[in-house]
Image (cartoon, rainbow, N blue to C red; front, side, top):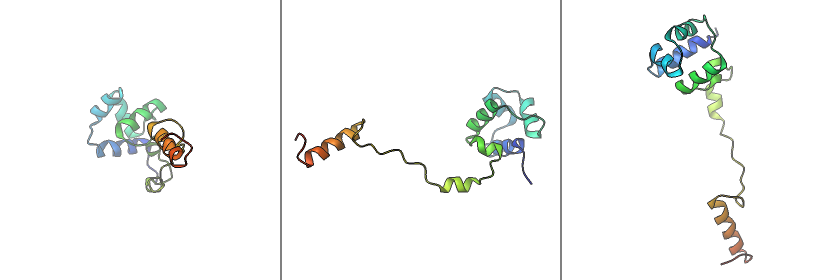
Amino acid sequence: MRTTIGERVRTYRLRRGLTQARLAHMIGRSERWLIDVERGGVDPRLSDALALARVLSVAVDDLAGRPTPVDERAARPPPRPPAHPHRGGRLGLAYSSFLMSSTGNGRR
């Protein structure tokens, strides 16, 4: 059985130890609105879902009920930034200087 976005909001809210009034205040909505969301009477707008996800420290996909389990996403390594040791940054310049000096092509 699939859960609704409201049920997931409630679950994450309770895990964070927040009351409905506190969470509603943190995202700039009324407590009545949050109660309606949690009961399934209202679907939050994207801007509200983003605010809820931010405050609850979860991904919007988690609130929306993305079918991929969180464990699978967490098991994947994060993408690696492109390696450009010769471009910008102190480490890149120092590394470039080291390479140049060790090959005899640079200053010492």
